[in-house]
Image (cartoon, rainbow, N blue to C red):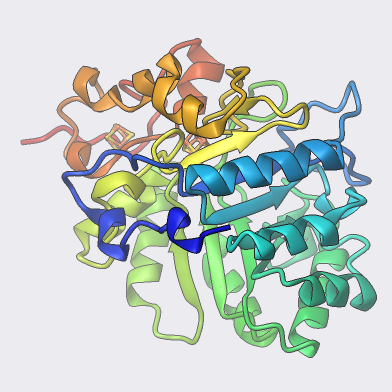
Length: 349
Ligand code: SF4
Ligand code: SF4
């Protein structure tokens, strides 16, 4: 493949306030399987009918994605390690000049398995952990010991790009300093703070409250340790708070909040396309480039800002915030032009 076809956006494009979405998808999520031996309370995956992406579909969508301009591929489950063709897929990503990240719980993450992923060329490994103790973690996640073991193994293997995915909720928000200490103890360089999404029953009762977010932002702002602590774009409220401290520079442009259909496309196990695995509007397009240009739903997502309603309209954070669209769609059956559940809403003076 001619590598020039797949030119990535410039770093400055990600925070360019004049750009709402990229003209090519930059990131692609592959929803490989819903198999998982764990039973996490926060899980959003529907497990009634088992599904697994065929290798043929995965390879074909990787090639299609590379032609469409994708530079970053994220592999997820279920438990991603349950998927039998991971090394082949990672290898294909590298052949196509795309970065590849994988998110895992830690279960079955033996030294041999992690070494195989690393040898295949995986660029980033994210371990999911929602608390620095088993008690805090198990409010929302299963498998604490597996996650800790996987962290130890990655550090022993000296794999550079090892991360923790920490989904913040009402039970663990004040445990952020404990998570930073845990990262220091296990020599994990990066703690990613993820936004809580509706679970498989569309329940979102334990979204962090305003105090949780303010205390977390304050901690991140003052933290001087060795760990890089960053909210994912989906956690737009926390990013907006950090921006108000002058700390977070990325709260403008296409990654200021929800990136669905703006930088990111998702491929479901049957090969159909959606803007995000949490936005369950799947479409049958043969080519990702065609979907990116012609999907009416993507077009609607990219114009949310033009139709803001309260509390987002008139909110102090309005310009720096684009909340999760899946929350509106799953809880109220409409997009979040104004996130009625937002605990951070502050009226402009
Ligand atoms: S009300 Fe809307 S704009 Fe304001 S912080 Fe909440 S999600 Fe963001
Ligand atoms: S819909 Fe929600 S989960 Fe999906 S990209 Fe947007 S913010 Fe993230």
